[in-house]
Length: 252
Image (tube, rainbow, N blue to C red; front, side, top):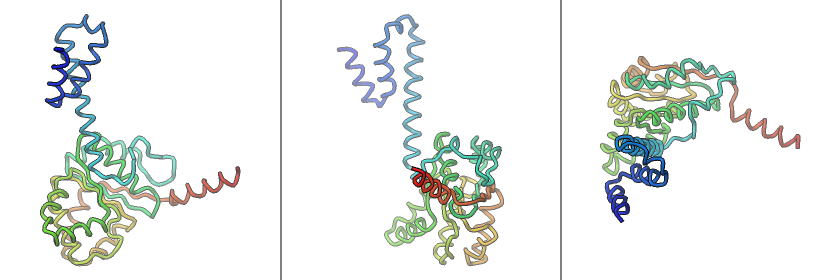
């Protein structure tokens, strides 16, 4: 009866990890050989692990990543120009502490989005928040938010994400409201948070795609100069996988 009351109180206080660890202790007779301090330390460790795991899952869910990717699964054998030492260095997440950016460029299908999402997955596992947005969808959201009065709330959300991914950056020429919205987002984050840019458009063409020279200069100055640059090359991975699938089917 006493144990049941203890469990109820632990769950009521949201100490689920500790409650589960206490149940484990009750089912293991050899735990009685440990001192009170050792048993209590075990409870605390188990609850800490449970809480951190729950936090990580929440961060990953809120990130809304397009790809279920992680750094450990990156294929370095394909000739795509991925610098393994750079990726491993970035996996320490020191670039986040220094509010640096990452720019990933390359042709369609070489794995830019996958790499960006793998970075964001690592970010979440290290305890930082991240958020994935495709550039066209981002501007749709800012347009709607401006119309329904939720613009400040959206901008605050974009500013607070420790790492913001903007995918398909500059794939179409920007409208005036879009480049002004982009400047607001980048300015709010500059020096405080990190941004990952992923695009098939070469950096040399960004100025023209943004349009307004003054705004383009302000945006790119904040994005590029403190960024780690990754330029992927090679044939589309989607095309290669499709060819392999067709080949396997024909051999059956």
